[in-house]
Image (cartoon, rainbow, N blue to C red):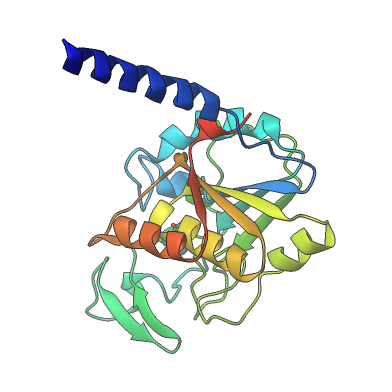
Length: 232
Ligand code: VGL
Ligand code: ZN
């Protein structure tokens, strides 16, 4: 029938454009892969597990081959950190508390400096990575972003590092899409980088609609949402 023929043609066109799309983004010497918080704390069995968090590991390992420049981050909290619910009398994990710099989601104790929980996932294979940035180590201030702490003003140094190395484009992966990945991506835009988030190389916490909200904010700020198959 005509309907079938039209449908068939549409499918063929869609398939053609899909295969054309694959590999259209090529990281160059001015590109960096940022691997956010792929730590034991955020995968199954960790203290703040992200659903399917471990599934990003093979995707990121494979992506790494396409990058000359790779930066890894670790959430690296002190004991009794201000972002832990246990630090605040009467507060439970996933409640919100107003701290000096604004509203803070309170988390289970996680990623405490030097613990096995805070170590990078054992299967993460990034031998060519050049820098590990640790963040969230100031007792009174959280840092979802790998660029700027939650007070909105204390830099981690990553922006300066990337700029001094001539990096123009960053590709953000890791955990969690709606917290540390999103904040890192948006701060990278603020710092003037071209920013891609590789969606299938991330997994989300999705607390009260936070995943949809994060994509909306990232998109509004010019972060490009791509898939690992878009890279050569
Ligand atoms: C993260 C919540 C608390 C993250 C870190 O890596 O996304 N989320 N600390
Ligand atoms: Zn944290």
